[in-house]
Length: 139
Image (tube, rainbow, N blue to C red; front, top):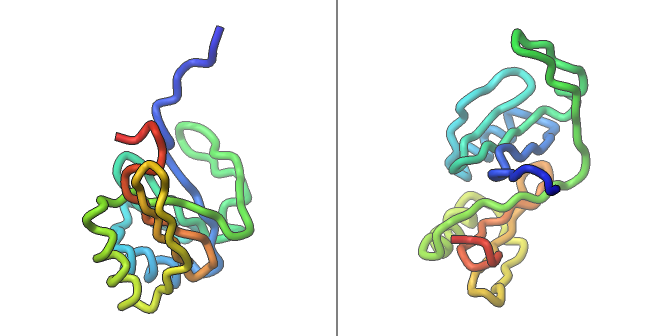
């Protein structure tokens, strides 16, 4: 017997010190538009997934909702996430980030042909813009 299948990663969460500062970065620099926001979190749709930006310490208590309970959670440290982009858009992203004062922290050419461009958000989380060709299951 094996585990039932998992269809994908639905949410990725990061935890930040200043929600307004993070919103400015994710909306003004990365161009994301929130689909939900409150005092403790901003949710950004990205493809079929959601990037959740939580105020650090703002979700430690359980939240009781009409449909059930969301257990408390939190995180610390510099988290990593990767955002998928088209290969043709990589030069534009490098220029865009530099124009917004976001340093390119690293770049990797992968054996399968993909490229990763790395940068940091205001809380030090490591963001990655990744073109196709990094993992064998892509495409």
